[in-house]
Length: 474
Image (cartoon, rainbow, N blue to C red; front, side):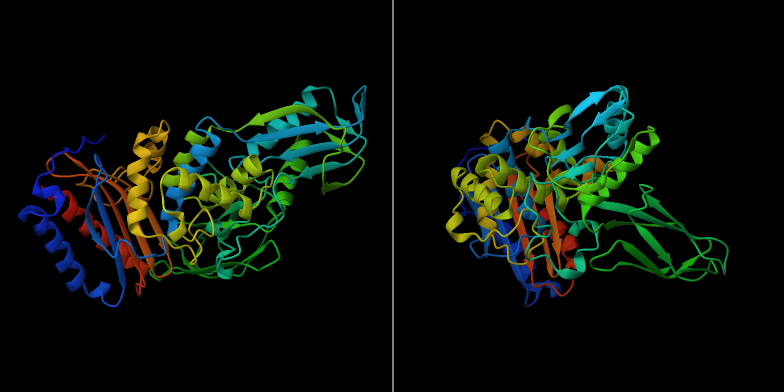
């Protein structure tokens, strides 16, 4: 995609000449005069992609909140520790004996961290049982999520985020409603009716695990939509209040479920019923019996393939499941503590100065993560030499590409620039780090971290202007 950067040591790269000073002066003037950056923190680091030489830095050595730029570290650590061909498995196990069409024992679905399980996959599990000749289970139906620990939410998650897809609970056995793979969520679509009527509500997947309390009303078509969707802490009832205009498009939201293991179990139970399979025991969560044998294993897509929805769409659940998976594989414990220890180890191996970093999760949703822009740009330089760089680079959003799994979070930004970069947004924070092709065809690495903004939604337009200054510099 990008041309190689000249290894020339002329003044335009080493900071001593008029050309580089012009870029530096333009950036400094912009930071100084942009009203929305007043009293905010603006961290910028720019490197030569060929040599790694730092050619501009503004607060580059200051720790700032990275938001989803944290995923740049998580993805690199996962590729290094697990490998680009790594897959997640989900196992179907039985104990006891089969006599005729009866299983005299328990049927167990054991999750091992696959964030891409869809409703159709549970249908496949059930069909495997049916195809083996079993249509009655003389025992329990068990969902086993013990591959990871039972801490569902990262410690620094803001409480109001837990109902939304980006704050979904983490379980080794979970399910996604569609091929965005937002594990642990359902989609809620509110469809307007005639004025004065209640709107229709569609839940996907169609599961009894989620209940909807619809208090909304359809109003005249010339009024504004004002819907509020909420899931109360500790439950799976979604309340819809407010109004939607009769002539408007439907409103669709991704809402996190409470206890995703039981959500997956409910989907499995539905699939078993559809196959005509009955059982005499309980449907419950638990641990597979020690003597249980695997009768079927489902493998996920490879890590290199998973990185596409993970990075393009900035999927927080993928990030945190990767953290727990690294902890499980490397240290035998699927926890944030052990997984983040792997990230630190891998970042050390890659040459980052971890003594000046603060890493609290894999997604960047924590306001306690702290990274200097210079360290992010350093990482982006170092990974270019790794054998797994192609899937890493391919996973980055591409500016101006309209396809969802190409442009991702940059598909409506910087259409006139050749940019691959990771976005990031949390309250008061907007970040963008990646690679840009300059006017003369060279590749530059940049990390832009804006902290303490009054409105984080102001960040993208500011970042785009900064990237344009970098790209048009010869």
